[in-house]
Image 1 (cartoon, rainbow, N blue to C red):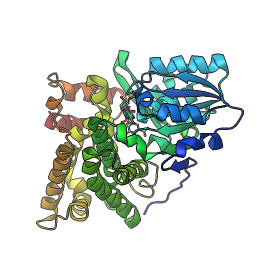
Image 2: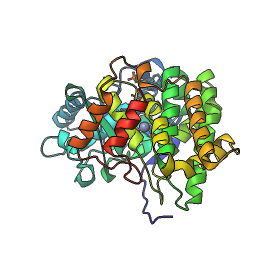
Image 3: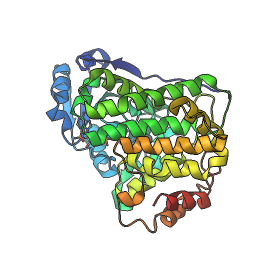
Length: 387
Ligand code: NZQ
Ligand code: ZN
């Protein structure tokens, strides 16, 4: 196992009825900006619960943070916060609203052009940020308990990530009852995003980190167990609560401790969202299987272990078991009603590989993945095989 340091300051309040505890976790004198998305919270009772819990606070609302949150929208909230001297932000939504709030939190005190936080990757050197908490409405990204954020800028077709110690949420409220109102498209997205977060930190090479491997396999097995059940019945609280906890645990920093991590599927996937607007999780389902095939010799040992422990594949050589594990993964994506070819989502895919390679080269991203083996040539191969 490699050396590691770990700190995660986010307080979690998990379970039914926890939204009512907002008063216990937001400082009493705060002037609160409640930020949310397109309005799903007004139809499922979450908005009413939040507003009831905030009775007595001075509250300003900011709605309209879109899926794949847009820089231009978020900058409007930055202006409101400065103008109205707001000192606490509450994100009520999925990964997009939470990521959007992370960016707002960083951009308010930032001196200079806030896009530079993303463009120049300044997240780790931020000097201050507006404190914020979250009420999660969509288990998927893990953003509720991590310090990462992904922001889009449609006018230049960019989607960029940043992160740093100041942008952990102060607290996150995880009430699995919010899952009941999710459309199956978003449930499928959430399960596959969480699944791929685990894979990015697990399908690398053996590092003698036995517990992290078992954590990863436990989350994958639980997602395989509950994912189809939540799709069939989002009101099934037991399945929904396990789904929600899996998604948080998949990307709250625990799995990466002492092990190599990949993240190339995400880097390539983000480009597919930037170029074609494909849902984040679906871009991962398009890229991941072909990335594993292209890097089979590097990842074979962990793929075979995954096949054996998660899918019960015991027959054949290590390479055969690794390939069978990739097939099982694709089957699971299809079971969750997620298509795995780029051409399932757009007719305009022919130049995608060269566009992405050019962008990566411009940014100097020439050696992605746990061994730096995802070179521009590999990116081209992976993307072309995903058409
Ligand atoms: O906007 P509203 O009306 O709220 O509707 C949302 C949105 O349309 C809806 N929704 C959310 N909760 C609901 C609900 N509908 C009914 N009932 C509920 N309880 O779902 C739609 C999608 O929401 P969104 O927040 O976009 O989804 P998700 O949580 O999957 O977030 C995706 C974003 O997170 C980024 C992605 O790139 C993408 O931009 N990621 C963030 C990460 C992080 N911060 O660590 C890591 C991830 O890998 C990912 O990149
Ligand atoms: Zn993701």
